[in-house]
Length: 114
View 1 (spheres, one colour):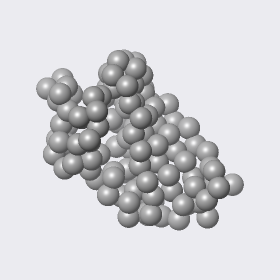
View 2 (tube, helix red, strand yellow):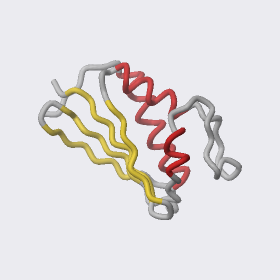
View 3 (cartoon, rainbow, N blue to C red):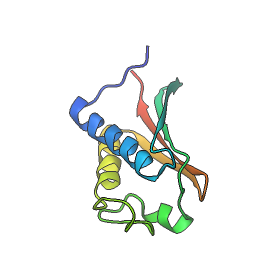
């Protein structure tokens, strides 16, 4: 059984933000979600096949109000990923980003498994 201890409301917001972000930038407007565990971590991956991002965009991704180079094509205010990062950190977790321009982005969330 995969179980984490946390605030359901806040984790729902964080996961919704990641799914919405994938859908905004994916060619087919979808997000692939994988849930697994390894040792003490519950791992949730949110992947898309979208435009990806540059290393420079990746550096600023979790900064409040930051918008990438495609900001004019996609609705948003630059709040969602900063908030998501804060929520995951509050739950003693980690969030990683794997991305390649033209191929897509995967957000990996690690939360302590109980």
